Length: 259
Image 1: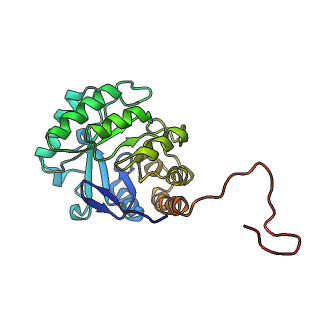
Image 2 (image 1 turned 180 degrees about the horizontal axis):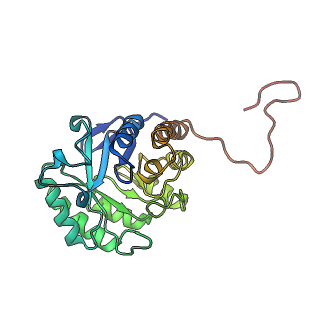
Image 3 (image 1 turned 45 degrees about the vertical axis):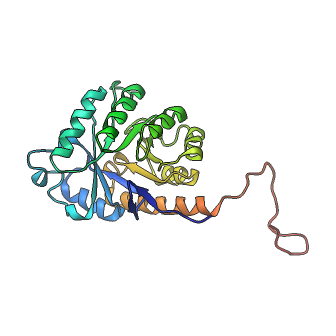
């Protein structure tokens, strides 16, 4: 199987790892982790950024802004209208016209509101935004978001910040199977193992934050996640062996190698 580049809105990305900027204990650790991850796309909550002076903001001021593409998110929004207003503020500040729609009502689960997410996506696409909605792993919702003009879809592996990994690989595989836009797994990743598992399904990329920022050594974990994305992608392209119920010897009684 030949690989294809990850392209979003005509932009080809070399790294398939998107990294969040929250929860790091300080800017130095954040920047070292970012460097080791190899990411080209950084995401952050608009509500945490000083939109009057984005270049002087504590989240962005320590970064070479020319090296990254920013994916601000609408975290904190509880309705489509709120998410649209937040996106407009981000674009007006000059940060980016890419926007991650994130609308969560339940504070316990932080699962996305499907109806409001779809409404916000439809409106923001009409206004010329490059929209990457954070969604559940519902294949029908994903299809509606794609039809609404989403540049990519971002189904969660499990609830945000839980580290539970992939709770429903089957649904993710259904999304990948029919997708005409990139599929970026977002939320719930806990370890490099989870990243490899998701990439082996055939998703186009991974977005994570807590798994790196709250690791005992965030810099080493960022590097591990980078390698996990690459290994998982290679494994997907190589094609795994068929699972069998019983053992199969690797050589015949005469010593010949079997297939």
